[in-house]
Length: 96
Image (tube, rainbow, N blue to C red):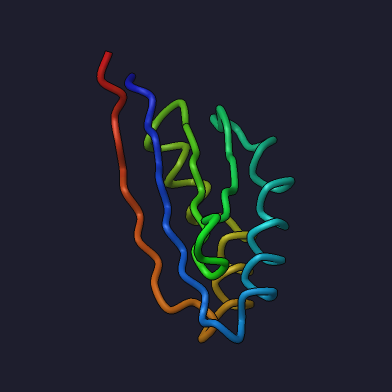
């Protein structure tokens, strides 16, 4: 199977940056031990504090989908409902 890379861009509403950041930070400790998670890294745009990027690698797409259907992603979505202006997911494959 081919490893799956996910690049997620999350844009918080300007008045909700702290909330979104806090909820994203919670996902790090919950996600890294998951089956199939190779890495899960949160980044903050140096020029835009409302723009977060998550760079993650998964052993398979199936295991990533299990993560996406998991309870902590559902909790994140509920906690940040109305606080995120844009969420864009890119499914990528490394080219050697």
